[in-house]
Amino acid sequence: MKKQLALTLLLSLIFSLAACGKPAETPKPAETPQPQQQQQAVETPPQPTNEPQPGQFVFTRENFPRLNGSTAMVPLGQAVASVLLGETREEVADLTSFSRTTQSYRELMRGQADLLISGAPPEKIYEEKQELGFEWELSTFAVDGLVFVVNESNPVENLTTEQIQKIYSGEITNWSEVGGDDVDIVPFQRNEEAGSQTAMKKLVMGGIPMMEAPAEYVSGAMGDLVKVVASYNDSAAAIGYTVYYYAHDMKMADRLKLLAVDGIQPSAETIRSRAYPFINDSYVVIRAGLPDDAPAKILYDWLLSAEGQRLVAQEGYVSVLDVGGQS
Image 1 (cartoon, helix red, strand yellow):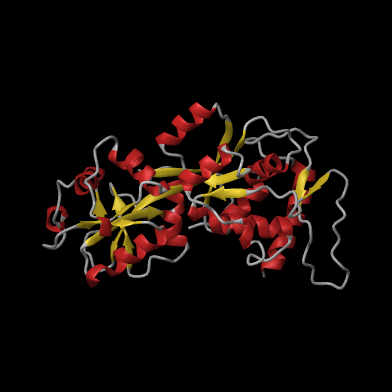
Image 2 (spheres, rainbow, N blue to C red):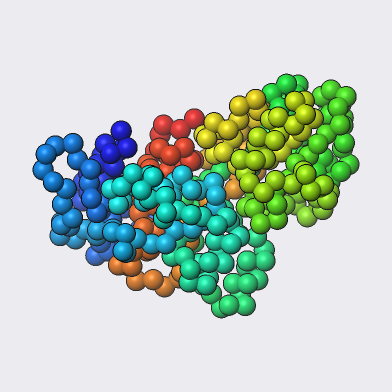
């Protein structure tokens, strides 16, 4: 199935680019070559060929950009490398060893990465960027929502922004204060290097200091936080936050419930339309000033194209372009 997807995406990319060009949102010079798979896994006897057609760019392992970014973007990075190199996800795993949001920006600025797919950088990265005199080219290629999860046995269905702020600042400490049972609230947080922690402070808290969480309430990995909220003391005490992609599309929300915020349930539709209150843009980032024929620039443009956006959507992320098939 993945081989068929790779072939289908490639053929669609070639014909759509020839017929229509790129979407207006991300214009591209006509002379810029387009990405093509190095090796297509075909179903018929003729051997795959590495020979590019005129005007088409061929990605190989030797010229493929060094990818990095948020851990939530690893599956997308694997899909991109698999499609454009004509290899399985297992075979391209060595190309997608992402170092998390904050560190990925550092590696781009230090020349240790060529292209990021990531959440927004924390404020300290902007400070480091200025100190280094580094300039980047950055575009939103997907949108995500910072969502709040509780155990499915928790009767609370909705929290207001103010209630969430008070829970995480330590002012509200019992679920009965927000319509739940008489149970102490155990609010889990992410570590300071995590993109979701940056989003939490920026999107939700708005300058309100977060309470200092005990070490056992701070999760190092996104998946760990989701699992611990689901199973904490086998009760409805815990609450945590993650990105919509993890909670919904990676099916990590077993025994979990996604809360509505201010009466709006997170979904692909409410996130893309930005009706849901806590929207966290996902960015594709490269060093500024790259020539149009640089592999990183070609991949950057492709992710913003209709074909790249279809792959983003097929992998379960909320694409910027509405290409259908998301819920």
